View 1 (cartoon, rainbow, N blue to C red):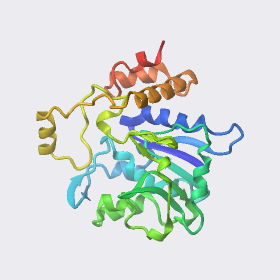
View 2: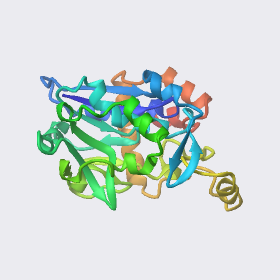
View 3: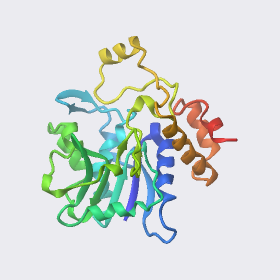
Length: 274
């Protein structure tokens, strides 16, 4: 069994902190591995850069440098695992905040229901468990081929192309969007504008945004990252990041590089040091 945090260069530091949050909660004797899976590991995805595809019915261009370019990787996890064992894939802005082991998530998939996600209007594949042996048609090549043949990105990423009887329902506590209820185990900073590690930075465009949308945001002053509305959740993130730094999971050099590149807020390192 394995836990993946899928990412790209833009989200790399956050991804390492997310991986640490899962790793620290595993029992010392656990055989479960945790790793960061980045876009450059997929030759097919890199080659897809500049290609056209449908997003909500509109033709857009795939940009490997987009802040969310990694999302298609989640549909290739069974292939990465060579169609063996079970795995969990999460976004780089997803953090395990429970004292319990994340291994409990693997109990939600089996031969009959090899996929498990939270459902909130649609399947939230930002946290997805898979029984890889049963998903042999899942691969990066098949996903990109489907996009080139006219499949809509939103339909693929929301698993609308999958037999719905094969998907098991994860409790909401395993993907809490920008809030943390008493039973919450997974905190997901899903609102990009208020991700606590980006406060003050220019807001990067996302999939499907056109020039008009970006112009309106600029005129309304909505083109910058803002402080998270819940200071407790911001503090929780920096607590995890501080522990990751103390454990050597991330380094001061990595933080300084990310600050210099404008990928994290300029006071990131200062917030982690006494």
